[in-house]
Length: 132
Image (cartoon, rainbow, N blue to C red; front, side, top):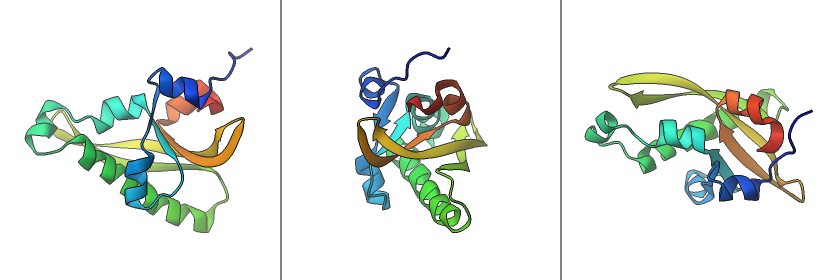
């Protein structure tokens, strides 16, 4: 049997997710947007080499959100799924790496049916299920 689902409030309080809704609004997403700490810590926070090249969290987050918005626009023309997989390049350890991310459109909480987007790595979704 799987463990009980965690709430979004618990995920935020425990630091497993971050609310990036304000940055998302600047990119044109008008619903709440959350990102897992796995994506944030590994890909949004730049390593030393990337910082030397002028990258910072704000630049990386803006790039991710712009890419997501593009894929949302393309996806909604061809699919009814609330999961979108999208590749995104990030510099890490001196080289560009393309990683696969996913966004999940779902309710903020089981008790709060407002829509939101959660950005994560596909393996996080498989490990956590829809506890996001």
